[in-house]
Image (cartoon, rainbow, N blue to C red; front, top):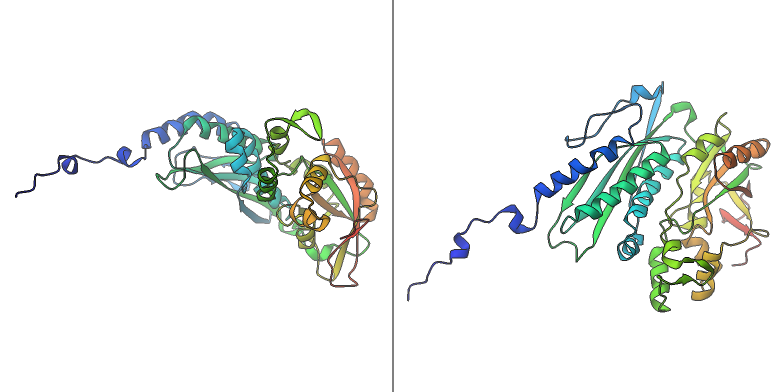
Length: 358
């Protein structure tokens, strides 16, 4: 018996049929152009839609520049962002995770690019995310000069999407932070975090799931706020603190407290023959971290290895510069406090917590 031809097979198949809508992507670019332009700084040139973003380094006035780059995402905080529709806030987080790392080398962030991927582009969601990215760029003083929006049918489930960011900064070669500049006897200034920031959310989500916590109700430790609002508080951007505290190059080094918490990150800022001694005797763990610790019976060690514990950035300075740096940082709108000192290493430990028993 002769097979009848399948009419459907003979019909033309378009890119839209496969799930990719180029026209929608073009409309997105058109609608976000004014958002990205609002982040422009001296040196940012060109427009969206080119093959690459442009930046004129000469316009910065840096004579002997070293470029510093960082790329990162927002981890599984993105899952909560999608659940709570906190798209604007997660955009800020994305910039902060990259820009704060650039600061840790002594560089000022100059420009940022983002990668946004989904199975089907939701233009309204994408715009809100990019609005947040632009806000993060404004707070860190860098320009949003481009990015990539990828539609990948079948790759992500439902409304899920993914984010990645890329930031480049620059510093005069002579001002690049060096581990060897930190010496025994130096002091360590802590800057408050806004909350959990963007690390440790896999543990947070596990705690919420295990204890059947409704994040849309008032926080158990703060009846004035919804728990979701506290969990989705965007990461602080510390560029203004860095610029205010380093007016006369007082800062020797910086540690951005991200994945690995207070255990893994501080030693990245000084040589291996030194130890940071945290003075935790008078340090009050913020209510959010205290609640997580008590609810899930998390040990202090795991807490310190996973979260920032309320300290988003560490600044290393000479003892004589502590008062000036803290005064200038506080004037810039941050909360700084003396949290520790640098001592010669006497054991295999690079981090010691005086007042916390592990």
